[in-house]
Length: 254
Image (cartoon, rainbow, N blue to C red):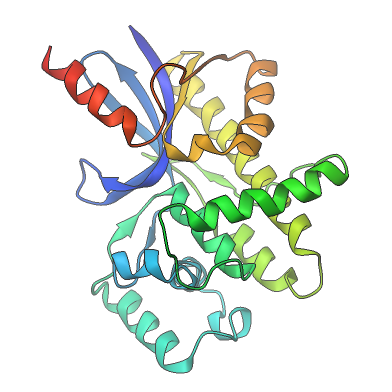
């Protein structure tokens, strides 16, 4: 009848008029409350940023006041200036809280994709790269690179993690950095879940959205949630991505 939920996906319209996709929810059969999110950050050019995901990294870093020119020297000067102008004027740069878009940004930083050819290309390649490092040894301990900032809603700030990847990518192996990204996102999701439990008193937690098709993220997160005392619910008969939307819409009409 009620649960808390992690809704991690690409971009979809939120009830506040911004693009959602990295949400921490308190859910009943009649509705939901949003208690937390990743970001938010801006998408320079809107859907164009999804096509060119290095723009997302530039927006997250620039929005945090970090030196984009030093961290992203491969970004053309004209494009960097255009992004800075869009951010400064909030022009054609909608707010977004999508975890899927952060996976896109990390994949672009590690030079896995410059221009996407299909939905989820960057995250799929990033998971594959991280899995190579995972098979070579145990995952690293999280460093707390996605801090939780309490508020209404609470926020998980991705800028320090993307800044670390941007600054270390020419010195450290890409598979290790891809795995670190997954580890830090899993740790942030756990921190958000614990904050949800503190706010609601609920320990039944549902994990859904297209990001949870990432098996590595699930392997890093689910055991930690269970060890922390959560009753974890996952998609079985209904897919976690877009295929599940129609089922939810049909349920709401009954």
